[in-house]
Image 1 (cartoon, helix red, strand yellow):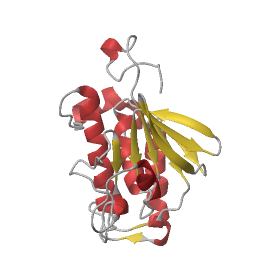
Image 2 (cartoon, helix red, strand yellow; image 1 turned 180 degrees about the horizontal axis):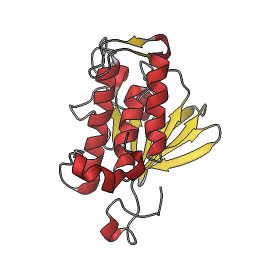
Image 3 (cartoon, rainbow, N blue to C red; image 1 turned 45 degrees about the vertical axis):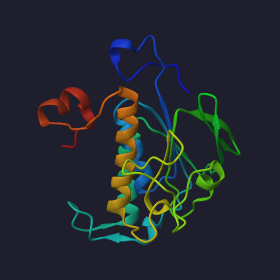
Image 4 (spheres, one colour; image 1 turned 60 degrees about the vertical axis):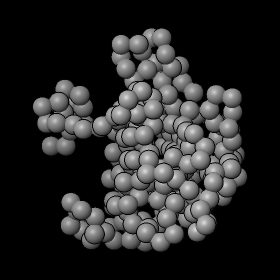
Length: 210
């Protein structure tokens, strides 16, 4: 966990920035990372690039007429990079465990701490099982509408929580729901990530698309 400051500039010198680790770099994981990093949380994504998107072509993603899956992922990765997400490519997570003040994430490279964990590993539910998350009768990870599992601070998304509905648009929504719940928890009130044109240049500067 970081001591670099709070997403609220008024108390940036006195509190720690909450940290989020996302396990999985497909649409769900990158969506969660985009929302949390964009709103000031320290965010790390562990990605082995095993997403099914590389086998897909999207004609059913609202707002996009036609795009190849790999092209979609390249744009998504650029977005999270622009907002300062620490993307650790080809560093598989081998274990996730609870600690006294959060979670420990292990890889062959080392151990990392986090206040929140978003699991976005597709149909592979091993980490959720090892962590002790509750499962449904359909053998998917049991979550609420905010994508939080039975363990406070741990979220599961996409194919982990759905037996059949494996769609990029649904996965992106799952990631966003998880991130907004994390942000609401951090801020102590319901949080809505809603930008308007008048704020865009002031807040995001050169990140605005021309």
